[in-house]
Length: 221
Image 1 (cartoon, helix red, strand yellow):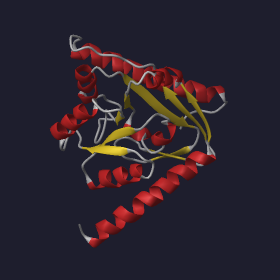
Image 2 (cartoon, rainbow, N blue to C red):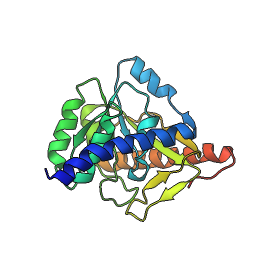
Image 3 (cartoon, rainbow, N blue to C red):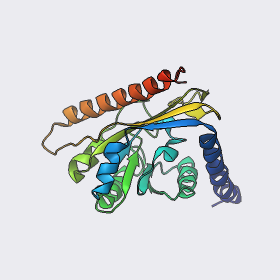
């Protein structure tokens, strides 16, 4: 690893974790839909969380479970994200649909036997934006674990001109985290039906998050 890359790997995750904590602590946050998740955790069961790539930055602060491993791209940017997540006590699985997909899927399948939640961005790492890839569905069908759609919205922030319109939330904004009820998929259910159910659940959960924000008199950025 070059000196510049070593420097970035040491500095950027620390700054990133500080930024995430600072923004989160300054916001007026509400979290909805956790009750069903607490029941699963209390029963010793573990989950697969999925959320859109543009909502990634503050998503870790909305998770209050026993611990998670997050699927993160094997790119250099992914390395920085993975190191940032370590500051919050969460691990990663490196790979994506475009790089290291098979190895990452095998590792995720192995982890389904462990006492840890899993998290994926099903439209990452390169899109198309808010279009579901099938990896998370296959993982759920084979492992038997439920999938939980998760959403984050806030009243103020900046959206980059990237493929996902990545959201940088603003300090002191109102913010909402929303969890949908766990979804179960069987191996016998057609893949297209599974995809349709998960896409609908993610869309409805996004709408719920935005509705909670609008009930406070503000709109999502």
